Length: 167
Length: 167
DNA sequence: CCGATTTGTTTTAAACCTAAAATAAATCGG
DNA sequence: CCGATTTATTTTAGGTTTAAAACAAATCGG
Image 1 (spheres, chains in turn brown, yellow, cyan, green):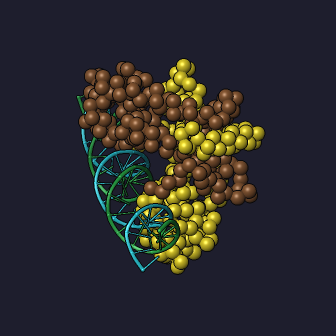
Image 2: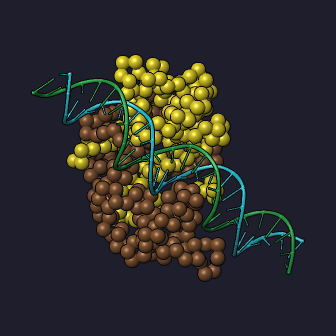
Image 3: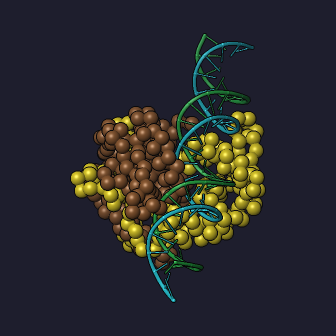
C-alpha cells in the first residue's frame, strides 16, 4: 500500500469537486471522506494493537451491549449489513471461541448469539483503547464544534430515515 | 436480504449506545450510520437504474473530472482505497470498454488511465440522476443546516489530517 | 556507472460484502 | 388441518477490499 500518511495529502474525492457542484454533493463527499478516514484509522489500530478486523470488532461491540444475546437479524439490522454477511462473521467468531451460538428454544428458525467469557474479556481489553483512539481523533475540533456536529448529523439521520421511501 | 425499509427501523449502531458513552464515540457512530445509509441508497439506486456497482461509478466519476487521465496511484489516493483494489476495478472497466489504459511514455512504471467515449457517455447519463438522488437525500435538512454540517465536517477533516501522525 | 533505495503497480491470500435464491420454520385464512 | 404467505437464516456466485509480498522501473549517492 502507498503511504498516504503524515504530510496531509488532501487528495480525496471531495477535493476534486468544483465550485459549481451542488453543496449537497460536496457535503456528501466530505462526509464520505471523514467516514473513510476514521474507518481506516480504526481498522489499522485494531489490526496493529489487537490483531483483529473491524467487522469482527463491530460484532463483538454490539454483542457486549446485549448480555442476553442477539439474533442474526438483530445483528445485521444494527450493523446495517446483509444477513449473509453476519452468518460468515459469526461462523469465524464461533470458531475462534469468542462467540457462542444456539438455536432459540421457542422459535427454531432463530439463532441466539452471545459473547463467550473469552469474548467478553477480549472486548473489555479493547474497548478503552478504542474509545481513546476515537477521542483523540476528534480532539482537533472543539467541544462546541463536536456538539454541533453531533446534532447536525442527528438531523441528517432523521432526514435519511424519513426520505427512505424515496420522498 | 431482509427489508429494513420504509417504517424507519432506527436500529443502528448509534442507537445502542448509552448516555454514559463519550460524546466523541456517539458522534463517530452517528457519522458512520449516516455514511452507511447514504452509501446503501446510492448503491441500490445505481444498481436498479444503471446496473452498475458503486466502486465502478466512483472510478468513472473521478476519471470524468480528469480528461487528461490519471495514474493508478492518483486514483487510489483520491478514492482512498488500496492500489491493488484499483488494479482489479480498472481491469473490469477496461474489459467493459468504459476505460482505456496505456503505459506512460516517460515513466514506464506508470499507467495512464482515462475514460473512453463510451465511458464518458455513460457518466453523462448517470451524473444528473446521481446528483438528483443526493439532493433529494439531503432535502430534509434545511439550507442553513446543510451549510453548517458542511463546515463542521470541514473542521473534522482538517483535524483528522492533522492528527494522522497519532497526535 | 552501479549498488541501494524509492516509487508505481500488480499479484496473492484471505476476508468481507452484497443481492438473489434456497431452505426451513412459523403464522395466517379459511 | 392445510395451502399460502411470511419470517429467519443460510447458501451461492460474483465482486470488492485489504495487507503484504513481489516485481519492475526510476532515482540517488557515491
